[in-house]
Length: 367
Image (cartoon, rainbow, N blue to C red):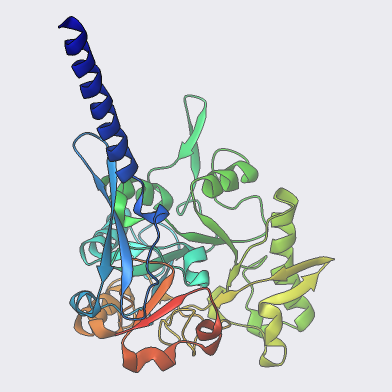
């Protein structure tokens, strides 16, 4: 009798163990299973859900035309690039701490999400579905834009600077994104404060911020000879390479928004000075010199990328454009949530550049 009971118990244990194995096998991530090919009318949207047991579950939802309609997806729409300088009461090129926080709060509350310069330049924009990307830039290497201070022997960001305010805001709103590009000169006085210039740049790079060229002395490039333009631009590249031998910047912000003479405009982005070569992907202007087109748009101009002045109270400034896009939301870039797809209305397909349409970098979806 005892042997029979023991045998039955062993069978139960074996069956239970087998059952557990099957359940574990069924938890294989969806991405590892065979998937049907995506079509131009639907895509898979992956979302991560945090359970009460701290286990992460990944689910997959297929987006359809009705989803795109609901969220008004438009990935050929406008992406604002905002031009800031420092945190001080000196409008319109500077804003106070409270004004800057007000800007960030408006962006967050109205569905804007920060993107990096890399996202802007690659076109692979990773923000949630239904939101609009926006990129922040800061000129002049000011210590009200960014500075370090020493606390208990450690270098930390000054909370009263623009970068300090962003860091604080993101703690409260982690889904806002954390990004900005900072444009500076060839001087050790950039972002003056505690630490060396190398330590300051190290902090920025380690915390996900990006660096760009704002010329050596902030001279007006439109008034300079070709040789002097090369010196103004190339000197900053030379300075950065002295700190980071393998690092190359990707963008320049023209002082006063002024580009070199039309006859040698190309050296704004590609040139050589003192044996140092530079090659940038975009030149940012001062002010909205044209529509805020994404880089994948057929009319995007890499020499003439507009920026909106980060101020309030004048036509064409940031808050004017906030209202403008509220009233003309069909112009805004609105994400589908997938950086590897470009989703547009059928009648906007021709606005995508031929280079992007011919590339295998993106899946283009129309609805």
